[in-house]
Every structure is written in structure tokens, then in C-alpha cells.
Amino acid sequence: MNGPSTPLPPGTLDELLSADIDGELERAAADHGLPLDAARAAIGAPEATARRAALVRARDLVAPAVPLEPADADRLVAGALEPARRENELAAARRKRTRVDAARRVAIAAASIVVVFGGIAVLARGTSSSSKSSGAKASSASPTTNESAASRALSPALGDVSTRDALRNKVLPRLPPTESRPHPSAVSAPKAGDSTGQGLASDAAGGAEQRAIALMLVGPKGQRGPAVPGSAGSGRAECVARLVEHGGVPPAPAFSGTGTSDGRSVYVAAFPRRAGGYDVYVLRAADCSVLRRAVF
Amino acid sequence: MDRHAGDDELAAAAARGDLGALDTLLRRHASMIHAVCRRVLTNADDALDAAQNAMIAVARHIHTFDRRARFSTWCYRIATNAALDEARRRARRPAPVETLPEPRPGGVRVDDAVADRIDIDAALALLSPDQRAAVALRDLLGLDYAEIAAVLEIPPGTVRSRIARGRAALADLMGGDAGPEGNPAPDAEHPTSRAP
Image (cartoon, rainbow over all chains, first blue to last red; front, side):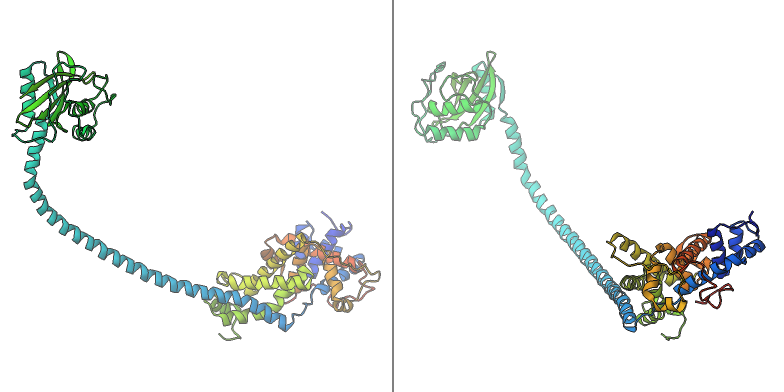
């Protein structure tokens, strides 16, 4: 602890003097670990008097406020009020917008409710009318169902058709009853077993058209082989189309299907005859050659 | 709003959006806000800029004034911070060439110093902004150390130290401890507690 006999460091003396000028000596002395009497003795020493006076002058140098010109004061106040005024206006605008938004939200909600209930009403009306129409549809669905049954009956998978009876028994149920009527093209039956297809109908007028129609009716199943009779790797549609093109048969078969004959994969195509009944062709799937022809 | 209403009352009205109350409040404290800025910045133009920023901040944040301190203290705190911010911005700018006063062997009379305002600014410019702020809050506004500590958000001991060092630097600049030979202030022998 420093005492009056021990000179204080200049910084400490300045701080004690400055604190004493401001009435804060007691706290300053305590912070420096000095008894108040010792601090008073230190700052009351003759050598500290001049320093104290210098510090007081320094204080008085700072004390006077630099006057603010009235024009500057007006400008400062106006400069501070302007943002405040703008903020007030913005706040008012925000409040107004909030009110408008709230009103708009209410209007939108009301409109949405109207739309929803209107939609529900329309749907309800539509449902009742559709029930009626579905009833009508149901009444008209019976033929469709019957047609589906017929379609199932006309399934193209015939199974084994190695014998004439088997062919008849499997093909005839799939064929509609025929009546004698003219056909657009003449039918010239190919020779059975003519694998080259040269025995097919020679009347090939409109062959391309017939082929296209046959493709549409039979469906684009199977691979398309080369358009020459007897070529290998043809699908059912392709084989039937070739038959139509080269065989002098009507442009569209009444039925075509698949089966086996003596263990070989075959296609069966039935064409209505002008005189009534059907010409049924059994085509070897491997090359579209005609294995058999039968008239039922 | 009555122009003679108290600061707290005016502040409450201003917080409610009363621009008249805000106008009165700002005019009432404009001089001291500017004075603090001028002492901290030691430059007239910078002081006006900082004072403008401070007053805008007062207007903008008036609704946050919670009356825990005097309005003037709250206001000067904003002014001091604005001035210190401006001082930091100024420190990043290229400094103009200034002629600093040479220490006068015989010291200067207080009257001379007050008259020679440029010399005061130049002398204060030798202090750090933190020291200038502490000195200004004490010697210009008359805040006690506890209030200054609250404004600057530093311990009271640091306030005392900054004030003492600031005054000592100014005293050295003016001629050291030539007190008795100079013209000591009338209250030099007595502790001073200036009223705001």
C-alpha cells in the first residue's frame, strides 16, 4: 500500500486528481488500494497543485458546448422528422392494406365457399343424371355382355386341328351363320398341300387393299415375314394377309386363329363363300404355306 | 402536446406517433446532441452528420425508451454511439492533413482556449475517440461516472481512467502542469460536479 511518503506514479496521481475534480476520489482511492487520507495527502502535496490546475484547465477547455446554429438545428430536426413522418405514413398504409387484405381474404373465402357448394350441387345433379344414364347403360349393356361372350367364344386359340372334324368342331362355333351373298372378289380355292402357294387364287386384283384390310381385321400380331408365299417366320396376320393377297379369297376373314396340326403350329383362317358356308384354310405357321383347305 | 411537458411525457406521445411531441423533444436536445458529437469528432461537418444520424435514431427508436434512465441520458447514449460510429467510419477514410497545435511553453489561458476553437478540436483530436467520449460526457454534459459507464457500457473504473488520461493529455498539450503560473480556474481547488 502506498502512503503519502511514497511518491505516486504520474498516471495514478493524474487519476486521483481527476477523480477528485469530479468528486469521485473515494472510489478512485479504493480502487488503487489507498486509504482516503493517504490519497488526499498525495493530491494535496505542493508538487500536485500545479498538475491539478492543469487538469482543471483541460476540463474547462472541453466544457463549453460548441453552439449549434438555429438553421442547423432546424435542418437536423427536419431531417429526423422526415423519416418518422414517412414511417408513420407507411404504417398507416400498412394498416389500410391489412384491412383491404382482410376484406379481400373474406371475399375470396366467400367466393370459394360459393364455388365449392356450387360445384357440389352440380356434381350431385350430375350424379343423379348419371345414375339414370347408367341405368340406361346397364340396360344396354346386355348385348355388350353377350358380345363379350361371343368374343370369348371366338377365341383364336383352337388347339389341335389335325383332323377335319376337329377343325370343323372348333372353327364353326366361332363363325357367324352365313347366307348366300355375293363377294367382292372371286374365290379360287388353292390346292391343299400346295406349299408354294401357287395354287392360291389367281385373282389378285386389289391385293394390296385386301391385305391392308386383312391386317386391320386380324390384328398386327406376329412377325412380319417377307411377302412371298412359303417364306419362313411369319405371324398369323402376315400369313392371312398373304393368303388374301395371293389366294383369291375375300379381303377379310370371318375368323382367324391359331392351333396345332400334327404337332405343328398352324394358323386357321375362315373366309365366307359367296355360295354360303366358309372356306377354312390351315396355314403352316413356319412359312405361311397352306396345309389344308376345307369347306364347311 | 404542451411544449413545456417533461421529456418522459413527450417521449410517450412521440412513441404513439405524435410528431409534434417528437419535434419538441428533438429541438430540446439538439444542441447537446450536436455538442457531444462535435467533441467526440472534433470536426464540424462530421459532427453535423453524426448528430443527424443520432436524431434519426432517436426518432426511430423512441418507442423503445423505457424510462429506466433519464431521457437525456438515453438520448446522449445514442448520440455518443452515433459519434463513435462516425469516428470509426472516418478512421477508414483518408485523413486530411491537419496542423496540430504545438505545446505552448507557458500554457494557455482558458479564455484563449475557448476562443480558439480550432485549437481545442486539434487538441482533442490527439485523444482516442473513447477518451473524447468519456471526457465529453463528463465535462460537457456533466454525467457522473456511473451514468457514463452505463452510456459507454464500460466499468466505472475504466471511465475514471479514460477521463484522467484524456485530461492529462490535454493538459500536457497546453503546457503541462503550469497551473499556478497560468490562470487556474476558480474551482480548481474544489471537486466539481457540474449540473447537466
